[in-house]
Length: 107
View 1 (cartoon, rainbow, N blue to C red):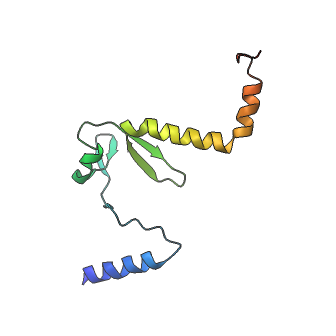
View 2: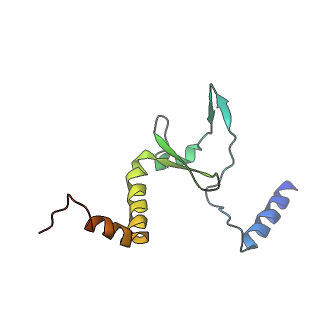
């Protein structure tokens, strides 16, 4: 009976255009206390993506309080992605700064 209810709820959420539903690789885990830290378990199925015991991860707080967890090997890619957005969004300001840079080589 619960399985039928879960399917009905999922179907109603998916059919709503204002709902962002991620049905792929989603798993609910609990936050646990270990010493003075809060800890979540990362499912073993994610080990091929680099989330293995002992691996370093970056935890980023997003607007709205959500968290993004990223393997540190992907940090460079994320920095380049953010940099590209900054250049596109602030091209004129960056050009003004470049034009007034006293250390730039001007003929």
